[in-house]
Image (tube, rainbow, N blue to C red; front, side, top):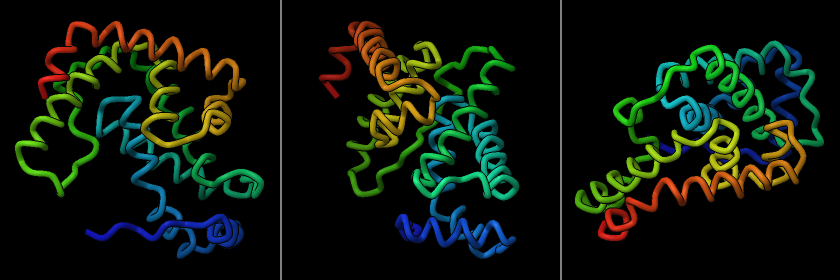
Length: 192
């Protein structure tokens, strides 16, 4: 499977102008470019592939119906992640059930590494994911946006609709809580 072409800001602006006129090819181009990122972010918050898929689909439904409200001054990917963030948080609040590690499968697969390296990486990832899902949702969202979705603090704060100072506080508390949750796993993580 080939990786979708990376969209530039100009590509995003042209696509969004076309989507505003009902152009389905432009809509498909945006979906191809950003669906995986939206799904992975939703999955990182929800821990359930089916719910993350529903959230990603709803994100793109909203792109189609509310695309005219996108502002060219911001990044389209950030706007989509903000929609996915809000939908995921709403879903979490509706279904306050706890996620078990068995519900969380691998999000990223690296086919270039050896099977042993993949197993080791998967075991470490499972330990970290289990710890991540013990964090409060806002701390987990902040960490996922900044460290796993490569958003800047400013972009992450915008997506979460908080100030940059509040985001940095969430990051600091999240890192501290995560370190504490992983303290007992240090040997397992270092051995792997």
